[in-house]
Length: 52
Image 1 (cartoon, rainbow, N blue to C red):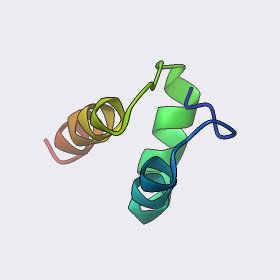
Image 2 (image 1 turned 135 degrees about the horizontal axis):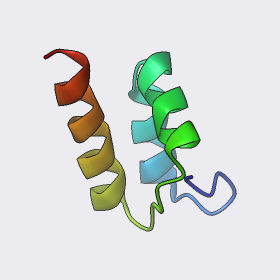
Image 3 (image 1 turned 135 degrees about the vertical axis):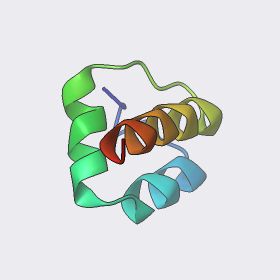
């Protein structure tokens, strides 16, 4: 799960720009997100899976 208290401003802005369903999926996944790149990779992976 992304640490909502330790996100950089860039990470928070990107996370907030995601559709609510993707945000919830990331939160529920329990994935460790340590950087903006991690967050993007997880979000893009979920987006690809959503539209298959």
